Image (cartoon, rainbow, N blue to C red; front, side):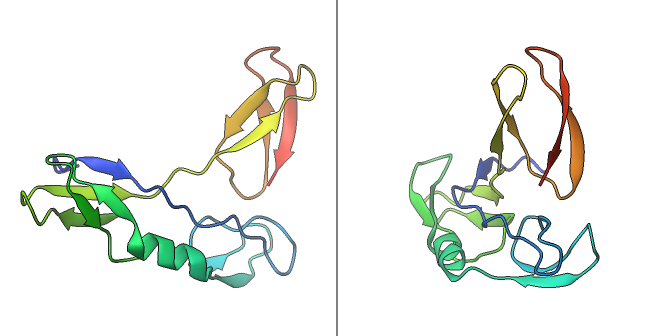
Length: 130
């Protein structure tokens, strides 16, 4: 990191499924390769692209609203009022999964494929597939 303050975006691309195997694709827009079957899928979502371009972020130095102007994340911006540089980073998407043993809700980052999860409350293991 180069000393620029980082602000998390408020907009996240939707979770998309592979057209061939219905598995979860890697997060983001554009061409994505399915981790499960290797198919290349194009992910686009016009409302998300518009929201990313028009996203207004307060400058961490002077609180002036700065328009992102691009759908790319991360993006480096400079405030027009105070000339303070900062970076908008992608939003971290999380989903809630209920533990089958104790019904505790766990917040996880979704990743394509299956993985074993250990519940911190009851210590039981279970598998999750995204």
